[in-house]
Image (tube, rainbow, N blue to C red; front, side, top):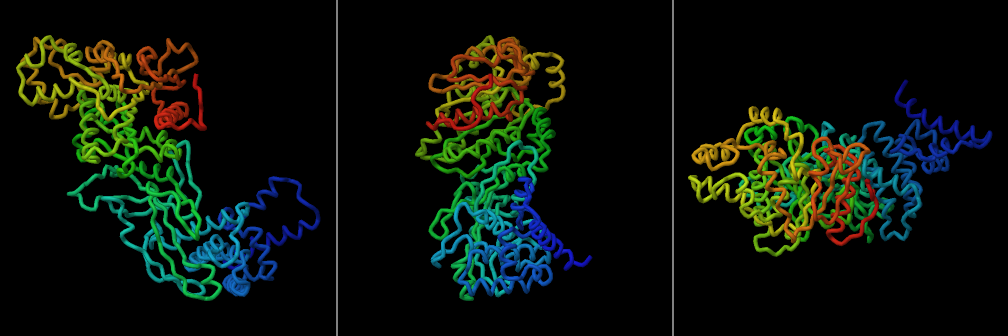
Length: 621
């Protein structure tokens, strides 16, 4: 069957349907709604308003047989009418369909021009389409989709922002593009992937912000690797970007046959969510969930978590920063710092982050940081790395101490991550040290380097920047799984110690009689055994009164909460006092993606900035 005949089938089918309708009305609402919902975008067929225009101008069959002639005839009619809305919309749909069928980019661009003129009549004296007009959304979708095709690369794999002269069926358009738009802070954007058509896997929720523009996910690289500046953006992050083609006086230019002039713009989602066009604020199309899912595409999560647990990532991925952000630093935004647990990683927070980012009251008040570490190391050492990373970040971002938001930091820790978080919010004195040693630190024979490392790791005070901590499934009194000797012994044989700990061993060996647990360097698994002196000392130290505490505890099954556990941590171990709130979630230990857990974190973050809770789940017990 020829291409021409294939094009005619949908139109002939529509004609048959119209003729059949004369025999009697269709009473099935599903059939009617499906028929009314046809469009170039949703079904690949002209919508009813466009079909009506084709019949009114006696071009229905002509479009099936000679589509370019039919479009040209409608263009002349649109010019003669002074920019009739019905004709502009029909031209947008028909140009898109023909561009798709014939593979002609100039018709895609024409579709974007017609759709833009339909949406924004500017000062032509013609009213814009009403907000209940279904063509409004269809025109935006036509514009957004056509924009992607117009600027796609030769192999179709990505969008390439660029300026220059572009052909149209009725002329040409000159498009300006400022290359400085490719710069985002200290980074350069490249490899723009369309996200509107990506299938999202791995996330239960997909958030899409309807609006104008082509949603893209861009890679980012440092402009000058020797000058990192204040940039903490995660190296793998795909940056959500929206491309917008502004067309100056589109409707007037079409009607008067004037040259069309456009300007291609790139808008970063973290900078703005709307733009001003023709005197109105227009929301930008956004696909944050798709960009997030694309960020983690191809990441070997299991390998990363296993190697991190065994201490091997320090060599394999030595360049990875311990603390990363999802956005460049912006003064006035409070940091929310996520700290993963044992044999875990940053992607485990994806579901929660996806939901929090969708809340405008949260994304407009917070910046999100993620801490990553080798989770098999001694907890005190990992906690020190967290403390150093947070302190360095604040000093780097706000060296003059002018941003009070950085002093309202919220730390959220899951499992072992909660213990790292607690170490940032306590005044330990010498209690943790005394639990491990019969002699004071200064009474041991140690190198200056070892002594200083132990002092910084074990003798801690609350970080002044931390104002709230959220514990999720945190084994404050240890984990019964970590207490199994067979597991602890196996892990000691498999792990690789970092150089700092290797140097610590020989020093401590000179003081064997002083150490209560011998000279074996404990792992995180050892530390979390309910019998270990570290966890027994830490559980007795309260969180500082200056820090607000919230707790989320998972319990599997339907039995009594007080006798329950999540498969790793007993309720009695995770429960602490005093807290501002405690929520028990019926879930397994990996509860970061549970809707109740997510909504509780969302509630807490809104409460932290004085915003009333809205939407979501309320009670999990």
